[in-house]
Amino acid sequence: MSDLLVVFRPEDIEMEAKEFMSTYASYMQGAGLVGKRPDGHAIYPSRTAPIDEEHTKFYDDWVTLADALELNSAVSMDFYTDAWFGRDPKYQTVNARGNAMTHQICPNREEFWQYGAEIVKEMGSYPIDEVLLFGTGFIRDQFCFCDRCRKEFAPMVNQEPERLSYQYIIENPEYHSKWHSWRTDKVMQGIMYLQDAARDADEMVGRAEPLRIAVEILMDPETGLAEGGKDEYGYDYSRINEITGNLLVNLYPWSPLLPGKGSNEYSELVESLYFVKEFERRGGHVSLFRWGVTDMDQVRGLKAIA
Image (cartoon, rainbow, N blue to C red):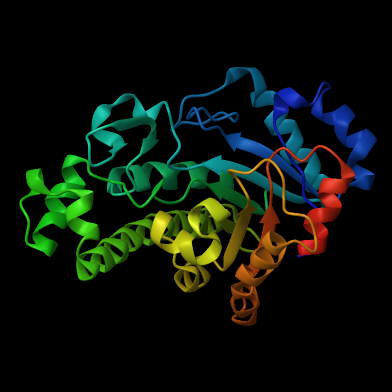
């Protein structure tokens, strides 16, 4: 966890890709670019997702130049955060009160896994090394209570679908444990679809090294850091290791600043990251990530944790 990769949005780079690479490539260890946004639009010429036409040429030039310069090339993809797909209410994730998150897709949707897999195949047709997969789980423990999730889960806890509530689940530790296991299975199935798609892309283009799928996990004190994230979002670090072998640890996504070295919060964060050693011992690769890094002090803070 020592190399630095900056992930750019095309609109943040006020020059053409060729000019940017000729100016900065010699200082870069890798080249990261947003490929599919939270609004559901792709910035490459997708045949599957809606397209942000303004940046398709930039994308083509960027990945071609990164490949020619032998930079580690990564493209990011928002998975269950997809406002375009979420226009259809049947795909929206819903809490127990019936409130839908219009920009979030329920992870219990095989057809959406297939949709995501097609996007991975498209991205993998380009000369890139890695897909950074964001938004890979349920958004909190209170989700999802859409009709499909109710119908599937309610019989597992001796309840009628329309009467199933979050309170009913958490009042019984056995039911709550089943809830966590069931949700985790859904999240892992979705990731498996994407990993299979990456292998298909490798075969299609004859890639020398397998396309990596780095799975984002959110780690914030608000949701219990590494251990709490398992129950909140449906993560299973061992199974992710078996499926993709790559983790992208998003540090403090709900907090504006990382804790200062020497503080109790810093010690708790470092202790929570101990699982990384076991993940890597089993052959996995782990990267630390943080959105909105704007100065070198923040970079040094990430490197110190790494």
